[in-house]
Image 1 (cartoon, rainbow, N blue to C red):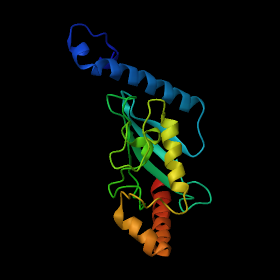
Image 2 (image 1 turned 90 degrees about the horizontal axis):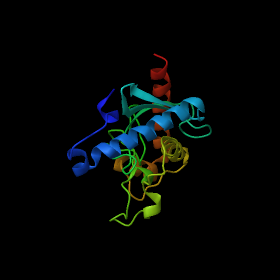
Image 3 (image 1 turned 90 degrees about the vertical axis):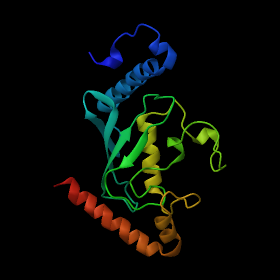
Image 4 (image 1 turned 120 degrees about the horizontal axis):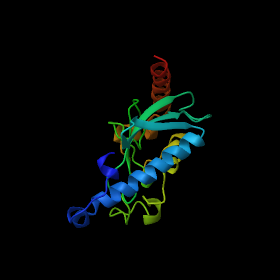
Amino acid sequence: MNSSSMPVSGTSASCTGVTKSRGQGNLILRKQLMELRKHPVDGFSAGLVDDDNLLEWDIMIMGPADTLYEGAFLKARLSFPDEYPLLPPKMRFVSEMWHPNIYPDGTVCISILHAPGDDVYGYEDAGERWLPVHTVETVLISVISLLSQNKPDLDSPANVDAAKEVRDNYTLYKKKVRQLVRKSADDAFE
């Protein structure tokens, strides 16, 4: 039995609330994993990095058809906080990416993965940000939708250089993305 499923006594859990939310988060994640195994969704696969840790998931996104990413096999990692589902996971591509809404280190920057509440910069409505009803599936469908856009959102880029290239030399941007798609496919079959 792991520590997250053990009953807790005393005052430490009630003082922090973390143990209770971690247990609830683990139950929710276990249910989502079982559902994805029972009913796989086209476009991605998901599984645990380590069977003993429900907070770290390996993700494989198959590049959406009729997009710059068609034919890609994009590896990523979803990391869930102890406070899940109250706070969003973080998603980071392990495969090399070149996209205005993906930081150079691979971290995905989309509204659904931003902490709940109002955006202090005014770019997003609270309803666009993380809500506890979101699931692994809704997150990954949002990322696939991001990759499916012909022209990425340039309003508040995570990768300024990629955004500048989309704006100034879209042909070069497309060429770089296609090279990374080929590399991802080669890496997937090594």
